[in-house]
Structures are given as structure tokens and as C-alpha cells.
Length: 220
Image 1: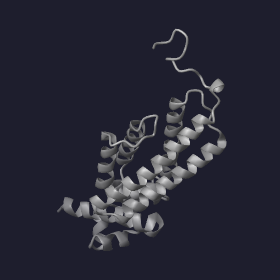
Image 2: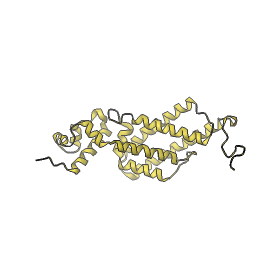
Image 3: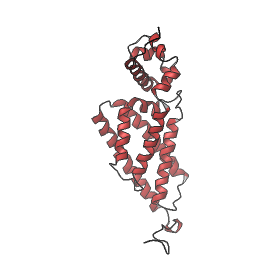
Image 4: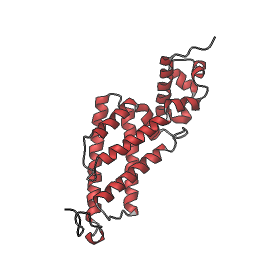
């Protein structure tokens, strides 16, 4: 007789895999530890997933990663060129994604080494850096972002990555998670806004490209 696979058991295995990866990382996670967390025999897991890699691919699918990156882009762009705090729909959307996929996001941000998504942490930081530079240039046309400022921004966003992972790992309760994320986001945005103002004030007006409104013959 063909094996009868139960969807509730499958869901339990996937959740256990995400929890193990978030706690132990790829190297420390085994089929046996996943089985123990899922309250199953190790042999039972192999009925559902023939290998650890196949199980991890199912626990954190590529579609989830693409959704995360798309939401991140929308969130950063929704903040606008002023980098002011914003209670926009994109912010709520990404928060809902984090609460729904909490453990998967922890793995992507901080425990991805060894998984198919090992490049995600660097890509996350690169994405934040590129989007922030885009916002700075939009706010201050003609501004030149020097290497020292880029270095600091990269370190700031490395901290963003690790802090978000720590917040999500530490807070299962949605209300507490919201408070922690809002506190961190408020603090960080204030710093980024101050940095954008410093960049703007340090750029001589003669080196800035005039905006369309100030060009001769431009729209007013």
C-alpha cells in the first residue's frame, strides 16, 4: 500500500526544521534533532523528506525569499527621501510578513550559512545600502557619497540585520515584537535622518545639480 502522508505532520516537521535552524544553524541541525523537536521518530521524517537539504528547501522556499526582498524594497522606498518615520501600508505589510514567517526570517537574516540562501544576509545589507544611497541622491541631487560614509552605512545595516534577527528570535508575542521593532526602527531612522542632513549640509551648493524646479525655464 502507498504511504499516507499527513499534512499536519508535514507542517509540524517544517516548523521544527525552521526552529532548529534558527537555534542551531545548518551545521548543528540534523534530521534527528528535527525529529525530536517535532516529536517524531527520525525514520518517520524520511518518509516526508529524503534528505536534510530537501527538508530545508521546503521549510524556507525560494518564493518566500523573493517575497521578503520585494517587501523590503517597498518598505524602504515608502519612507521617502526624508527618511522620516512612516506608519505606511508597506511598514505594516512587512511586519505581518515577519510575524507570519518569524523563524524563517531569523534563519535568512542570521543563520543562512550552509543553506541554499547563504548569500541572503549580505544581499540584505547590500539592498539596504543601495536603497539608502538612492534616497540620499534623490534628496540631495548631485551629492557625492564618499567611501567613508558608505563604510559607516554598511556597518549600520549589518547591525540592522543582526538586531532584527535578535528581536524576532526573542519575541514570539506579536505585541512585544511590535514594540521592540518600533523602538529599534525609531532609533535607527533618527540616526539615518541626521546622517542625510549631514551629507546634504557638507555638499557645497556649487557641486549640486539644480533640481528641475530651479533650472532656468524649469517648471515652477
